[in-house]
Image 1 (tube, rainbow, N blue to C red):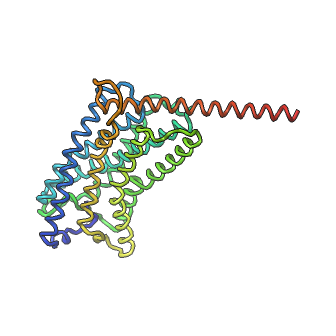
Image 2: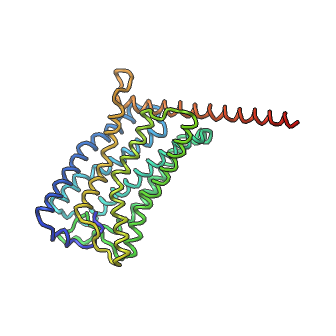
Image 3: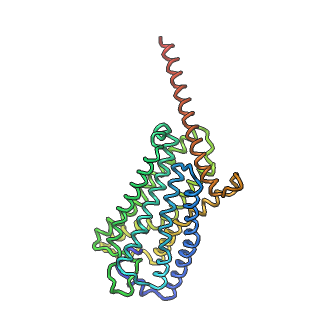
Length: 341
């Protein structure tokens, strides 16, 4: 998904260089599909089949796995397109690109909502008790999917439509003007990375401060797992959005939307994007190891059940802490009033 409107650079590349990068990217994408597709299917099946009591975090993990699976299902087509420079046709290219972008936005939205939910549970538990209603969470999830579907529409405006060009590829973005290029690239990075990352950072800082006040052990697996999911997503998507920023700066300086980043770098960052959809099941399996439970339960089931139990215990602990704090403050106020009188 190069930001260039010209394909001449890829045609003029030395065959050895192009083939070398193509092989590397295809191998990465192939491994992502072989690991990620069964892994996300396992996560979805485990939650739906074995986890009856689902916390908000587990429900968000379920939707995150669905979004990742939708991306990974398209991988064989992307690999074939890379290896053979295959023309799928304009409409088919648009569908592939749209799916990837919708799932990109939905994934970061779910991860952001995960952090907001944890912030509310720890810093505002009484408000969270009102928000605990399943219908409210389902409404939030539906709205996030709808927002992702809307934000994916601009990707349809840049998909290649010329089906007569046999060298056409789904990896090319076509902008109608410099203004459109700047607006769409900025929208993609702001809505799909910068704004959610700022919200994530604020929430985690506030949560960390609250846990320090309570002298609470924040190194439990369920907490560290959520952090690992956020870090993995950030590392995988950061190069792609850095390229977007470089392109915007280049366009502003030159006044044209010519290629600013080497195609091999763009393809590699694109491969990292697909890795982000396959890494979460690996994290779940790693964190599920050595969890105690009955022999009949799989490690993943025990992990998700522990997340539910931990969320409830943490919320109760925070409520007790805030209740005790309020009682202490009330007692101090009464003492100060009596001394005044």
